Image 1 (cartoon, rainbow over the protein chains, first blue to last red):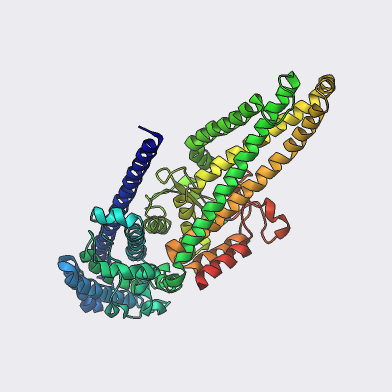
Image 2: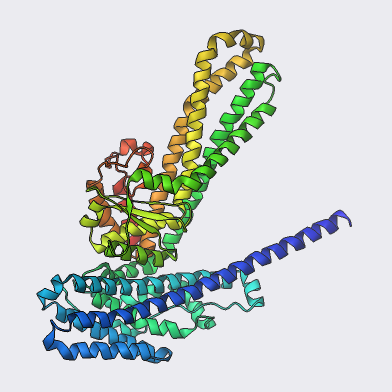
Length: 185
Length: 386
């Protein structure tokens, strides 16, 4: 084999190594995206678990608000039972509205605001809402990294070859932007 | 606190990436599919309503700014990484040059080879030797560094039951960073400060003072923890360990050279005369270099440290999508940053604001481990406005 042959072989080896590293990068990005998804799910479930506890704790003090409490629990149960994207979407929105109303009403009960247990639960729910948001944000970051890798040249040659498709961003439909205004202070 | 930003809020999460997202929508979805996406939406939309008293309510606002400026966090990170590489290379070069000069000097002393050109076996060996020494030393400090730091700062580890809010905020930032949740430490002192340590995301730890927990609201705490999580995500503690070790080594060797020169000056005079003027010049060069190298290395170390602080600030905003919390926290921290037990020259660079130094003194900017707080706030404000 002459010098030219060796050079050609070297180039081929380099291209194969490059293709392997691009492929592995795509796999790890796709896995990260999937993992980010499940993180959102974990936090949603946590939210569903926390709400009955809160209702249980405030139930006695808020004797005159049984309607609201019932609405919260029903909304929560619907969210847990929801199947499919459309149903889940509506159910979670309704749950948000119901808990929002509950938090607003709780402001009228100074004993509740001073209650250690209630404060802890409220902090937990707040943190869980934040975690859902941050998990979504991280998901979108991951999708962007995946999409950049899948769509930019020359990585897109490898991505197309092995069926990597861009991920879907997490947008919120306009209807959900109308969140009830709640004054807590 | 009402939640003004609902209109802009929910789109925020998707917002920052809007430019990239357009093609994505056309191209259809990949694995994760739409189910979770929609299932999770309402919860997100709900956060402002439930979290009126907390940082959550302000998140949507920041995303508005993030919508256009988001790409700039990544640009800032790239720029900072580049600069760090340049600075690290400079540092290694200083160390290697020092090693080379020593080898060259020894060669001349023994008379093995006269100073002709720059080729010197001992010189090259010296350069390699010092590089290897700093490598080994770095390895040792990387293996033990986090434990030493935690011991030196005098914090105690806390559980979620003990510090619910702090722990929650750390978990939130870990999720935003896509990192494992680090261990959490509290330093029982009224000073307001925070630090991060750990040489990988797996053995990372975040420490805060009691004064910080008492003095900051949830949004500000989130900004500070985001900054520390930024150090962890960017592997700053690892970089700074390596940089610190190299600087220490340069200082040590320079010190040794200067002592040897001083001590042996009388005896070496004869030999210098024998090796001609080259030897005398070499001695002068070596002494000057030994005097200047530690200073130069320190300047580089501090420059690296300042770059890392800027980067962590930018990363914090990337996580929280809110520069207001960190800005307000930095203002409070700078006023309340005073030394406490566990703070020393060895640990000062670890903290979010330097506990040993009063800021706003630009004259000393080159010798500072942290940028002036005004500069940090100015950059954060610029990020928010983009």
